Length: 253
Ligand code: MN
Image (cartoon, rainbow, N blue to C red; front, side, top):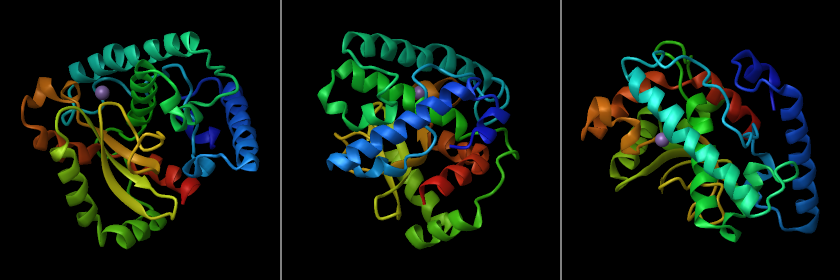
């Protein structure tokens, strides 16, 4: 992983600890690979997510007007913080050694654990990435040449991707996420997952590495948009942090 990019944004304060996690992840994956039991999509999963909630990389007001400060504050300090807290309880209750088992590996074997683990490991992982997928309007850069080529190859064009992604986000009944994922064959796809599931989970119908995604739970938009989820989805594109996503893609593709 690139510590430089993350530490620049104060995402991970403990670069040394993150380095240890990354190292362990590599060795765990290698040993699983040698045993022939590794979850195939995880061989190149980038940026291991720590088990604890990390600081937001910007202020609550930074994403306005697309996402208002009150929504961001409640989302981060209440909803996302609760997933992290409940995950910390579940890993103790279910004897997960978090110094040797990465969160990504846990997700890849989530069927062996409780519903509480599934909901909160997913919730914590998804939100940890979601904050990174966004930046203030005008500060997200643009898709890299490599990512643009991949998008054209899988969706025809950026408009093709957006149409498919927006449709998936709108069509998710109840609570969940829309994702762009990198599949094992390195192509991109758009999928939607229910609740706090994601495509790293062994229970996921479609598997792949989340490249970026959108939280379409009502808690993510209801204060400003009420029932108008499509308006939230449309406004969200102004926040996409292509610089982060390009870097993430460079480690997967
Ligand atoms: Mn959320």
